[in-house]
Amino acid sequence: MSGDIRKMIDRVKNWKQFLNENLELKNFINLSENDIETIISKHTELDEYQFDNSKNALLNLQKVLKTNTNLKLYRVLSVANINDINTNELGNHYTLSLDNLDDVTLFDIGINKDDKLYSVEIISPINNIDVEETVDANINYPFEQEIFLKSYNNIKIITVLPFKNV
Image (cartoon, helix red, strand yellow):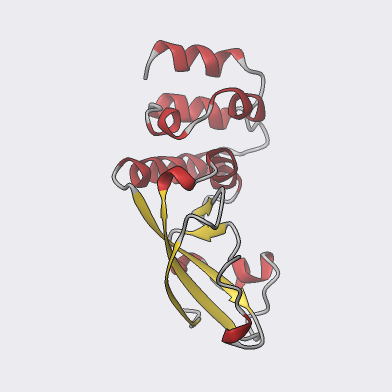
């Protein structure tokens, strides 16, 4: 990684300060593994296990973003009827895989697994990713592989299907 990025990381006191001042998509994609470790170490509340999971999540995210210009993303919605889904305002929280959405995760995000659930598959350009929110979520919740989008205006809906939790 360039010395400039290293200086920016070392200068800041915490993760939010670094994100607010420096993190753009191209900067994140080009961070070295050591830089990612330094960023995660700003989260002093993480134990070694959490640190390793966060590091793996960010390295995976980085790899995905380096090798794609568009991402296939997924979201689960709880509605009474499929016709109640507002396809013009789907929201900004997605995951890289429906496999990440088990009963515990669904409960954590306020969805009852007994509700009528629908999965939405979309394609979004990577420049539509809110890097700050996405990186922060991948540090704090590494198993969710969550992607935050800046806007839902820039997406293409591929499918809307009943969600079958695996």
